[in-house]
Length: 79
Ligand code: FES
Image 1 (cartoon, protein in one colour):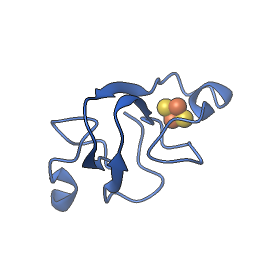
Image 2 (spheres, rainbow, N blue to C red; image 1 turned 45 degrees about the horizontal axis):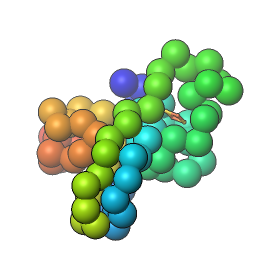
Image 3 (cartoon, rainbow, N blue to C red; image 1 turned 135 degrees about the horizontal axis):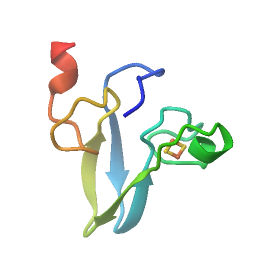
């Protein structure tokens, strides 16, 4: 995972069902979602794609230390 360039706190989103591509490179202008910047900036990284089954609130990890990627597990509190 890339170094966080945007802070380490999770981004909380109200998710809707469907396939989501979460940014792992930290360069997206639309965090926590991928906007293709990983390719434009040749990071060598790819988004993490997850299927959301039903409407829910999710905390998306931004510190890249979670053991439950792409979701926050509280690891940012130990940085
Ligand atoms: S923009 Fe970061 S993974 Fe796609």
